[in-house]
Length: 573
Image (cartoon, rainbow, N blue to C red; front, side, top):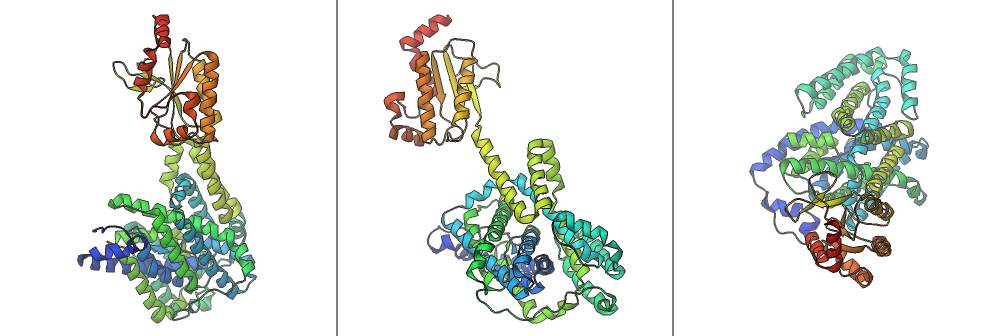
């Protein structure tokens, strides 16, 4: 795909760039992918709407309107925008108490949440905050998704067995399920299990094909032929035909404050998932992804979903896999999918009223199996018990506290991991590689040599207020453990990209303590930005000159040529 020079409207709307280089041979591939994607999204969207506690048309409207605009702004060529199981369940678990049984108010609150997600995503995009998304670790998301999968399953199993589900957290729902098995509707169970088997077989032998659409159609035909509604099997019911009124939802200002935690959680989930999907396909197909640009696309999609009577959307993993495997070449496939959904909404939505709920439950259950990444969990266990414990904490957080608190627990865990790793940067003593001017970790390579009278300390990473105490302690622990007399201590700065005021004060304190011991102090390989910071703070007035990019070997040679260096060499000779 040809890329034109960026600038102006092209930066804001990437489609204005790549459409100019669009090749005719891509059209058929995008059209086929769009049709396949729409066939997959429609039953999934209806099922997700049921998780959100919303009527089926809400899922269709959200997929339709978000798909009409997402392709214009996204940088990923394959990410498909959609309602998702995790966000749907999050919406359903949060809005029930706020709506008080009023379905019109419930739908308005859901649409308002999408608009709030759009507003916050736009704000994050405006300050170039896309990189912040990477702070939520994949380890946390692995555990979180597994917890969401089980929670989703607990909401769908009662529907599969033909009786009403419970409320509360996972344990309460699963307890309700087992205690009401005696209420199982045999006709519903047979139909649901049959649909589940067909979907699983299709997933195995016809991967990334719209098997769900054919199962849904078959379920509707069976329900009409066998009069399943008269046998106690719950059907989907009427789905309004035509487009909804476009506009802002009827909510009060006080509702915005109540919806804020939900909107923040939806944004976090949506942004992380959309970025993860985009990175996956960008690596596979070797193109550049702009996560900040995709935040703008997410904002536009949620804005469209909100004013179109939908609810929050994000990039959908299974939907994107279907899109990519069906041959999509550009984001135009998402627009084609939206057009196909539009035709169904206008002309065919009435045929959905006889869709059996057990079939819909089977569609959702098969969809959420992709959230449990067994191989990723096994890899975590083999790689690090600590990383596995982090995933387990996110997993149990969802099951014990619900998705909303589970999202917050995951975000807090990610921040704690980040701070923990940053607060204890790797610190080592360096030694000379024999016969060279190259210095490396002394502990890892026994053949490296200590320079007589010289202690060389290296810290990897930024030196900031929250890690200076640990670095200071580590510096003197390593210095004091040396069995030989030290006359020069060198702080290697080549791996320090950033230094704040606390870091500067730490270097000044190290210099002061060393001077009291009669040990000289010097910096080596100081990067330009850090050197400028030291210069502005007046470090050279007390800590000595900071020479531009002065190599470690040169610092040592300069010292050895001085009288102190000569004395040190004589002592060791």
